[in-house]
Length: 102
Image (cartoon, rainbow, N blue to C red; front, side):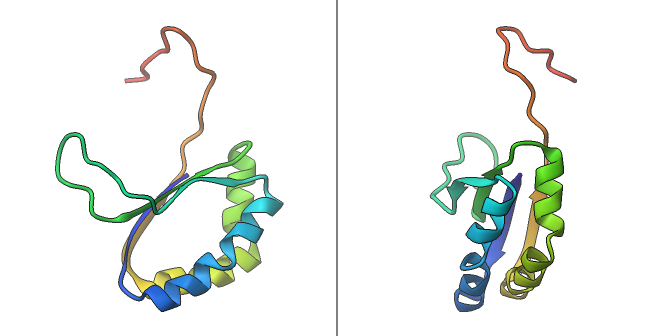
């Protein structure tokens, strides 16, 4: 899951980030990144906060997102950010010549 947002109220956002790790752990999720600097290699500069999450499978990711405790905490995220996006894409086994699915 890739999450991007512009945070305008850091104090309110911290109320969200304090709860998120515990909710992730219940569903086997983990942070791959959590707001580290992003370098734009091509295209318009990326200026938002980015968080990348990993889950064992789609069902776990969806269960985490729909968890009542997470949804309650996410109100702080929504209140602190002017815009944001959370997108989910399933991975697949790596191979030497993967089908590009174009």
